[in-house]
Length: 530
Ligand SMILES: [Zn+2]
Ligand SMILES: [Zn+2]
Image (cartoon, rainbow, N blue to C red; front, side, top):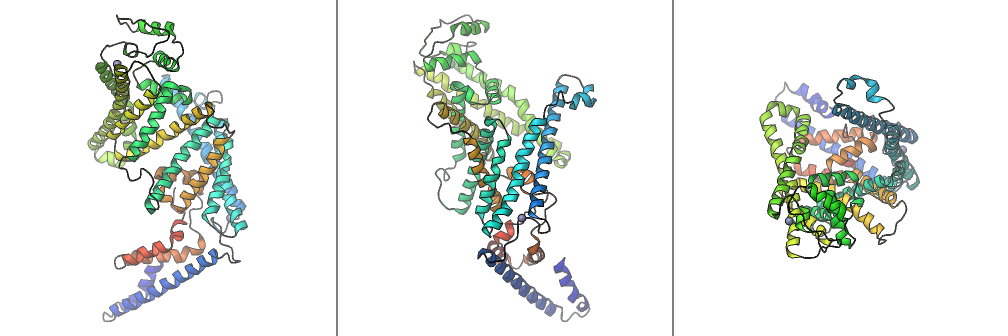
């Protein structure tokens, strides 16, 4: 706006007189250049004053017309209400699904059945989640103001300290398993940001970063741990995870128990195992020993004597079982998030969804098939079982992730990695290889939160966009306060419009400028909506 009036005002009386228009334009450009230099000089001085810790204290990160206390309390209330509402909303949705599954469609319209206190038990949970998010946001903003006042300067260290201390709000959750899961999830995300940051700066070579398939390697290691834990230490995995793997694979529970006992040198529960085998209607019932050296193939797949047939059947059964799920998982976002596109070309969208679902399902089927294959192969060549076989089998079968798209591989690795870490942590503590520090997960969460807030405020481009959006939505900024710091508002906007105008003839200049003032660029926490 400012620049356009500047442009129009002098030129409009001139425009009838054609002769001097080019001359006027030239003078105008010179004036703009001088103005730009002046503004830059002012900004430089401001920054220098802030850096030297002059008596003039740098302004807070929030709007200056609001006191620090009001800002913190406002953030607390807003985050609390938002996360409380989201948690209750999820509760109602789940309740509605439950009613639908019970075929009682009319009860959906009955508010009493849908949201009564008796059936919808979310209040404590929602309060805890609200306190976690609200407590974090409120104390984070309060601490940033406090640190600014104490240290008289704004440095990345302020952000890290504020984020770490505010991370204590995780204590609002009373289940230490959930706290650990959350902490490990954040640790994986923090590692991702650190990795991206180091890579973009070319600072130091991280082992594996030059590998083309570093993500596959990571996924493979994580899967090795998860599959090992599933066979040997199922209690170290969350129940939902155990159920998912159990349902996806072809081998049934009593067999896993027998394998576990066999590897540990414990007596195998013959009664339950033979009951299970006779149920599976096969003629050649094998003789079972109390202390077998290895559980033979005929027990692992009693339906068929051929290992190859068993593996092929396992893979295809997995495909049939999971395809509907994967199809809806790819199709629904396609339709909901890109409705416009879907309406303009429904056939193409369906095709893309089918292609994506086939790819993901093939990956999972190959995973199951290879895992079973490695185990059968081991039985062909060895006479004694060892628990490491399941670790190796998991690692090898994870190579099937190469079927997936390159971008998905990294995401999958980051999804499985916290689970693997969780299970490893549990096992190491259980074996007394790691001291069982009380509330260790709280400290980990605090450290991670400090790191995450640093990357959010100073290098947001290193974070996954989804996570960045989520944290900004819930934690870091109030929706009512999307404006940039007011003191550089006018001049900064003016510079921006100037740059847009001059983009064509001075691209180089523009680049140099954004490099010169990274703080100005990143401090604009003004990306609206997020
Ligand atoms: Zn403040
Ligand atoms: Zn076999």
